[in-house]
Length: 93
Image (tube, rainbow, N blue to C red; front, side, top):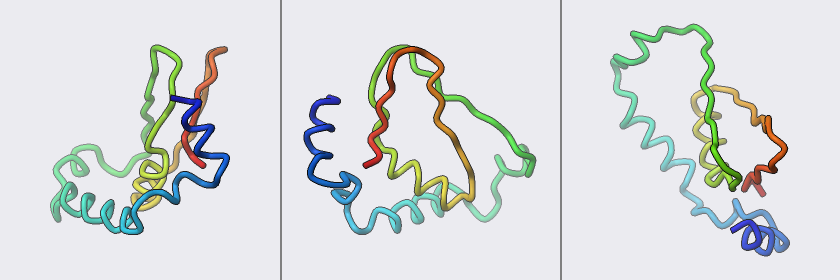
């Protein structure tokens, strides 16, 4: 899989292959998933929180442009850390 990504990315930013409407689609999905009264948000509150996504084996993180846009629209921040000796490939460009 990583060789396909490397082959495609040599021609340009693979995020440009996404439909022009993907940001609007994310907005619509968030509107649908976050009703006017957000029970989850009410329970959790407004305090900063932390989540971790762990991987058991080497691989490629796909969907990074979608992930970036969701977090941008929700005004959240994130960081990728690789705590092992095994490389993790991010499909970002």
